[in-house]
Image 1 (cartoon, helix red, strand yellow):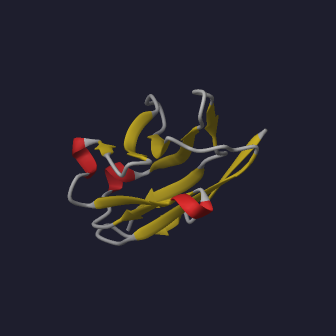
Image 2 (image 1 turned 90 degrees about the vertical axis):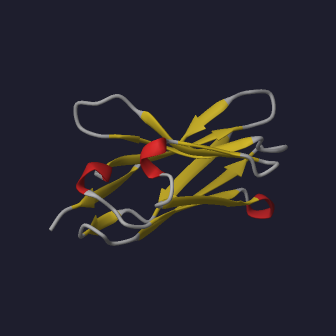
Image 3 (image 1 turned 120 degrees about the vertical axis):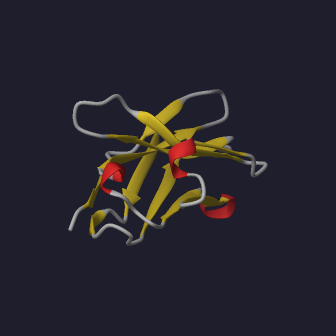
Amino acid sequence: QVQVVESGGGLVQPGGSLRLSCAASGSIFSIPVMGWYRQAPGKQRELVADMFRDERINSADSVKGRFTISRDNAKNTVYLQMNELKPDDTAVYYCRVVVTGGDLYWGQGTQVTVSS
């Protein structure tokens, strides 16, 4: 079994910054993909950014230039540095982990609220 735990959400003013962290633990051989998704009220869950073990990145156009994803493979941890936050970034942010064999695991989610 694999556990995925996020941290770092909160309330921030427009233009501010937050850093999210996600750690995976348990029966893990390797993690080909770690990333972040978000879901705003009344909307579908959407990709924010995925990072592959070889450091390739897929990210949403809406966050390019503002958000940076990184990972520490030795710690099975992925980070999301969010700068220049906008009210439209308000959502529950979920960490997603894809382990060897293709199984997916999700964290419980962390709330990010951007408001003055």
